[in-house]
Length: 452
Image (cartoon, rainbow, N blue to C red; front, side):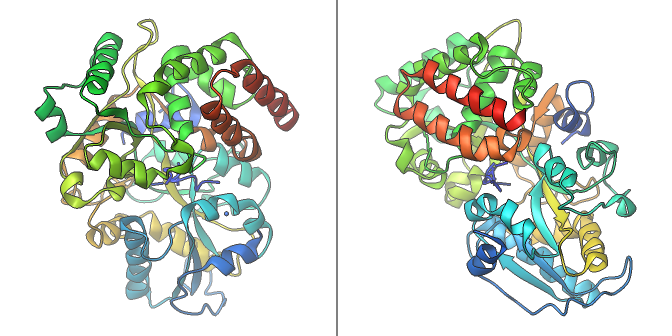
């Protein structure tokens, strides 16, 4: 993502990956399942676009602020997401006097180098994601146990559970979340007499009418290798259900099963309604196509607003992907949680923990949103919603009403499987959608090797 996340996802920092917002009941489901709600570390250093001040690396004592190095998955000047993180860091310095050195790296590079980064000399605190990706690093001993900074005022039990690894300890501090949905420009829909589809028949009729009016139904980008995962996720959850999807990510279901092949067969029938030549297009370029009215819709995370001009952002609305099987419904979606971890290999553990705890505060969220043209949806219930627009408010409502929430494919499964196998396989499918048997067999063979 993950971005994304993006980004999201956001390895993604797959994003937006899987990039850059929630009733805790639903988030819990994402972290726990139904029933609960960036080659080397040198590479990151080499890619650093902003070093605002040097870190002394001195320890200030438990719970006391000290100078920290802060690795972020947004390049300097990249847009609202960078603006939010930079403002949060500046607010911490203003509040405590501690210097925060930003190591700002573009999302995809950060994500693709994260494992090597953590094995080298990482920054004290870095941006990351909830889900399997967090738990994987916790199990490997590469991120710090943050149990002693929880509970965090304004952070629900559900978020705490989302920050908890298999050993029952917390390794993560949530800051925001965002749903994946089908985005469109209200003015384009109104001009063409289109409405949000309520059924599969409505959905297919909408796609055909858009094509008939010479508007490509779906903007689509696959140059960012994580981006097609969003389409796979939603089709798998609509056709096979949330539980099957999550078991697949954990290796408990097979990629060459009839159920997964049905997902690819369905995707194949929908590809003619997507932008061509997607492998050479970034998600931002796809978002621009929708903003210009060249495409009618875009399945993406709500960070899509970061990729379009303000007038288009103000014109956006969205709906959740319609049901494709009446027995399964449409009550599951991706809604990744973004946040922060403290690197076990960081120079100053205590200063890192103090900074991480503050990053989860309402004050930090407000500092970020007040400095950005596009607010994120804060995880902290005490954060101001004054800057939320209709899109953010609807995002909160959609996630609250969801029965099951996934974190995004590259966040819900093993990083090696996601980044070295699935991304390439999905791109191969887009290039050759007739080789479903070969692609699914290849994924399953490599998944069995990686997951055991």
